[in-house]
Image 1 (cartoon, rainbow, N blue to C red):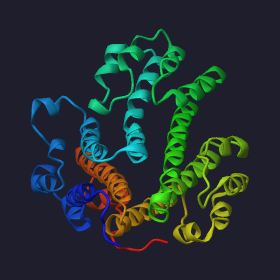
Image 2: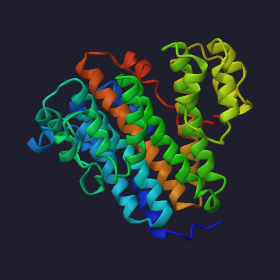
Image 3: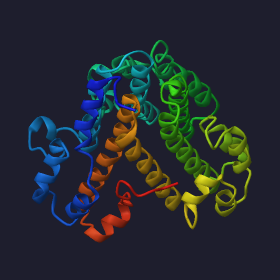
Image 4: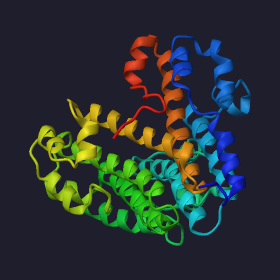
Length: 349
């Protein structure tokens, strides 16, 4: 089937995709000093990460990384309308959640509002948080109350209930993350009819992988009971739906959880010996799915979302490379620590 709908967006995504990491080039860059890799940064459109411009230098490496992701998201949002535009805009909220968490963490730990503001990321025209109002709030409960009327109202109401029960940053963060992904799932459900196989496959790879890693961490790292673990997971009807997640949360070990997974996830995690290994395999599975759909989907939205997922993760790897150099970590150790993705085209069930 030809790519007819959204020809402009198809073209833009194809051009943007040229900046995605080539595994061989990235592996070579790991063995060179960052200063000697300027051509590599230019080729991936990430010069801002190494810029000497004072306007860039005053921002943290993470703020510059997020700005690059936001720039691409804005290009895509402008080319969309209706439910498709709302879906991508909601995904962009993942970037702004960094600010919301920083504000709430700062208020809970007594940081000065000016110091909090200096560390926030500028969302530009896609900003939805009333930052100044949140910083002026008298306490953390008022911070959450002031989210009413914003796209974060549902997250704020849920977080208020959590905060009233326990002043625990872990449970606040998990509430934010769960509600964000829940909103993404709800919005994707409105779009599956336009691309029933592609977008659903991408969402399944993203959400099932996230749920599996969260379940393992909550149960076997934080020691949460099965019922509480299940409550903190993302509700979906994907391969790991509610019934499966509830059953998995009741199992006693990593090994028993992996043995009970449905076939595609069982194949992807066969031989995994740790939660970190499971997470790396889920990441490779998501990347393989995203690369396949970016190359072959006829849906401009699916291709755009696949690109954004890959770009955001690529820039995390590049940030990790830069941090590793600052810490004096050698190339071989960097590759192991970063758990480099498999090259595009390598199949993961």
